[in-house]
Amino acid sequence: TQLLEQSPQFLSIQEGENLTVYCNSSSVFSSLQWYRQEPGEGPVLLVTVVTGGEVKKLKRLTFQFGDARKDSSLHITAAQPGDTGLYLCAGTSGSRLTFGEGTQLTVNP
Amino acid sequence: DAGVIQSPRHEVTEMGQEVTLRCKPISGHNSLFWYRQTMMRGLELLIYFNNNVPIDDSGMPEDRFSAKMPNASFSTLKIQPSEPRDSAVYFCASSLGLNNQPQHFGDGTRLSIL
Image 1 (cartoon, each protein chain N blue to C red):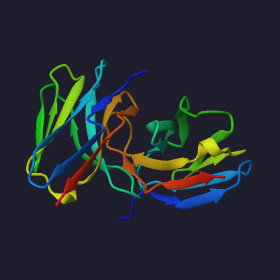
Image 2 (image 1 turned 120 degrees about the horizontal axis):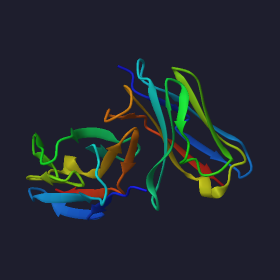
Image 3 (image 1 turned 180 degrees about the horizontal axis):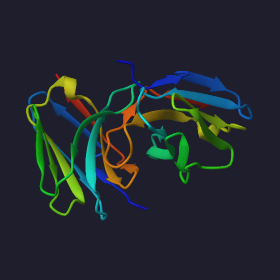
C-alpha cells in the first residue's frame, strides 16, 4: 500500500507569515496533485506536478516535486485568512489517487 | 458549468436501514470515483469506474457496500444494512479519463447513522 504522510497535521499562523507543508512517501508517484478543501465542500485541485524537481507557482503558492518523485512541498508566502483550509496532497500511480491525511491551516487576521 | 452533483447533501438514518447516495458526474467525464472521508482515516478511495465499468473496488469496506453506474451520467453507492461506523462524508469525483487527470469533486453527502 502506498502511503503519503503530510506534516504538519495542524498549523495556525498569523496573517503575513510564511509557511511550508510537506508531503512524503517511500513510494514513487507518476505525478503529485495538491488540493484545498473548505468546510462543507469537496477538495479542489490547485496544481499537478509531474517531473522530478519541478517547481510551479500559483500566485503566493509555490509547489515543488522532489527529484525522486517521492515527496513534495507547498510553500505559501504572506499567508492571508482566505488561505485557511485543509490542504491535501495526492499521489497518482496508474489510475489511482492516494491522498495524504491533510494539513489543516488556519490563518488568523 | 455544472460540476459534480451529489444528493442528498445530508442523510440521517437509523442503523439497519438502507442508504443510497447518488452522483451525477460532469458531462463528458468518463471516470467516476467514490471516496469516504473521516477524521480518523482521511480521504479513502472506495471504488472507481471507467466508461461505466467498475475497475477497482478493493477499497469497498464490506459486502454491505455496493456501487453501480448504469449510464455515463449517474452512479449510486448503496449501504445495506447501515451501521453507525459508516457515518462519514462520502464524495463522488469525476475526471476525463484516468492516469494523472485532475479529479473534480462534488460537495459530498454527510451521512449519520444513529
